[in-house]
Length: 91
Image 1: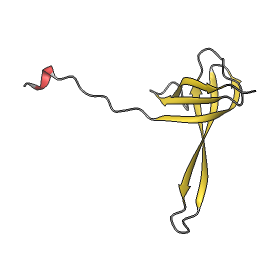
Image 2: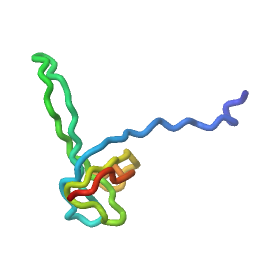
Image 3: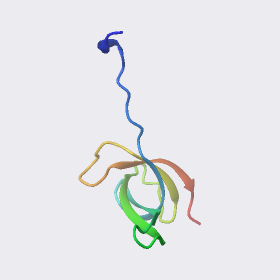
Image 4: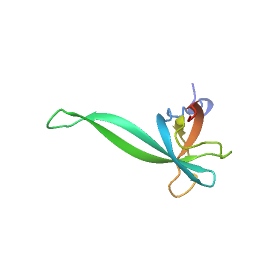
C-alpha cells in the first residue's frame, strides 16, 4: 500500500467540563475547569482551577452554566476552546 493513498489520522482533541464564570466579552466566555490532583510530596488531594477562554458564537452562555468544551485551533491570542454543549443552565 502506498503512502499517498492513506489519509492522515488527526489526534483526539481535549474535552473538558467547567463552569462559566464570565460572559462580559463579545462572543467569548471564561470557563473555570476544576481538576483534582495529588500533591507530589504530601499526597493530599488538591483542587487546581484553570481559566479557559471559550468561543461562544451566539452569546447564549450565562454565568453559572455548566458546559462541555473542546480544544480547537487558535481563534485569538488567548482563545483556544469552543463550546460543544451546555450540560446545565444556571438557575
